[in-house]
Length: 194
Image (cartoon, helix red, strand yellow):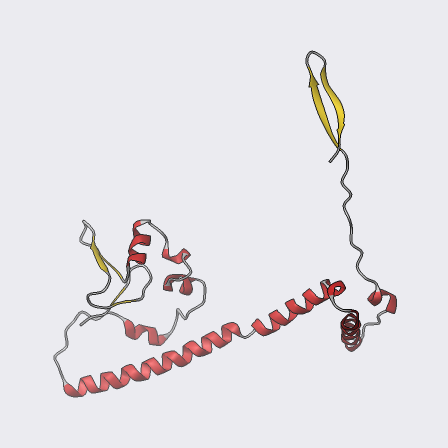
């Protein structure tokens, strides 16, 4: 029993599941479900659909270069049954899957390592920009935290600069001017209320 991979999304295609499409040039396309088959018929590019394996690999979300991935290669040459060979192969398969899982976890942790810091910076920026929305007691706490941070960096800060609230510019609508076309004379200006 051979478990093929879907041509579109690269998921496993189990026997009696999915669709097999054979083109006129004898090229075989296996699809795990109708969703993949429909997308193939619509000539969609799997690298542009976020749920496919090819997208994840192209955008650095999954490992691409790893020695454990070489074991998944397709082998068409039949091997004569040997009990010892099968036992050692099964042990090797388990060991390879353990190694791959460990490397995938490390890859994921490495990829997500800076997220907390980036989120914290974004939150601080949001609070700094919208201090006027905070209750008065929390507003002073935020200003004190900013002041402490700046003191740690050996930067002198004047109280006036920190306590100043950002000024908001308000746009005042201007009276619109339209031109009325008069037959034989040209255009005439007229005032219109907004």
